[in-house]
Image (cartoon, rainbow, N blue to C red; front, side, top):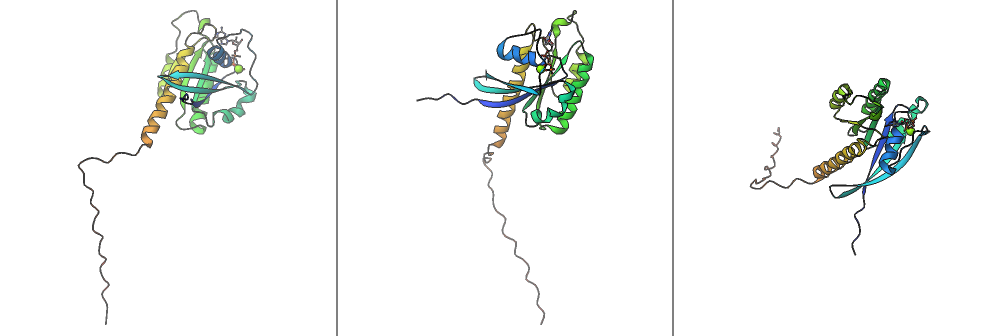
Length: 207
Ligand SMILES: Nc1nc2c(ncn2[C@@H]2O[C@H](COP(=O)(O)OP(=O)(O)OP(=O)(O)O)[C@@H](O)[C@H]2O)c(=O)[nH]1
Ligand SMILES: [Mg+2]
């Protein structure tokens, strides 16, 4: 009798200003739905998504936090032991990008040192010219080892890509730490000889 391998679960937290589209991104990704009248999140909501990356099943345990300022202090509850953070801003609201930087600074001080970060520049459908400027966001992201994904919860643009990037990096990190945990095999052709124990000099005695 064969049983399916159990999926590894990774914890992902979404952070960002209020109204930038965090809930909409998650609902588009998990349920493939979008609402123009999405209600503001209170505290946080929780959803899961199972995906298979390169044949490996994983579960994303997604914490979608509330962006309104009055909920800011709850952040640590959700990011403290998170494996990854998706920081979201609204492309047509530059203040919301300032908030992304603040979250990154807080994560760098308070969250796991190895947390994986990605940035979503959301609401791309509202940007008339497709030559919108995400250069600043891209160079900032590069400086913190992250990537920016242009997304629209409304049209679906970039959603699968950003979650796939996170899931792939989580799996890669897990593989690397599993490899590091393996004992290193002894190198061939090297004979290890214990040093002779040193003979302690006998104290000279006096008469
Ligand atoms: N046009 C457009 N509207 C969007 C997009 N994403 C979200 N919205 C709208 O923006 C508003 C806020 O979206 P939410 O998903 O509730 O934003 P949020 O970041 O979860 O907000 P909080 O829960 O308050 O932190 C809603 O009216 C959504 O319909 C998008 O990609 N394009
Ligand atoms: Mg929300």
